Length: 112
Length: 114
Image (cartoon, rainbow over all chains, first blue to last red; front, side, top):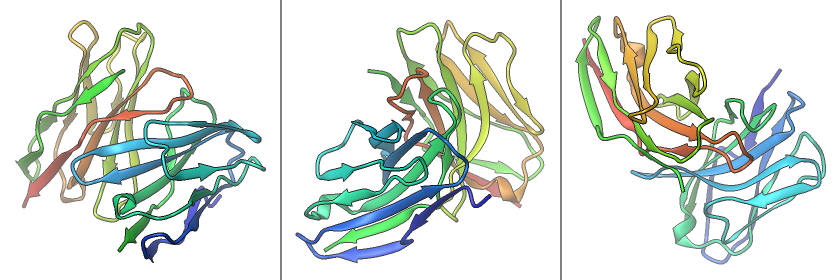
């Protein structure tokens, strides 16, 4: 199993540009989520999904959209990038909400 | 809202010694889950240990063990026989078991002195 994969690993955007961070898992996990990690802040939940067709907002959802058309994929879209969205983004999955998360390798995003 | 506090931004320990990382949390729930994650310089988040609040017994994984004090809302991580590969950021995290994910502390940077 590849586990949780994320692409790209690094990305630089200009303010106002849009892009999609890709996340896929091959463990047939129902639960998937996106976190952002900022220096001195730990990880904070952006959006999550409990199954295909179901998504909901986390702690810091503004400026991000998600969709879950399949069990495997959970892309994160930045609609109009802002410097405040400079961060490391992690996708994670688990069999259920109460289980420990399997994290992807992360995407380092810089918005100039 | 739940909060997780790691009061030690950085800890340093000699190789082969024992070190304890502190974590406290705030919740009104009686059933929940606690985790310690390790993040080495590679950036990958790696599960170290998981504790279910309804279990009295402290979780252990090889050289890693926890001291779970439910009444005090404390969840410390003990690393025995520290190794150079243990050098990393360590994050304590709380989950109420619902879909709203984990709440993380701000992390403790662990340095291993050879």
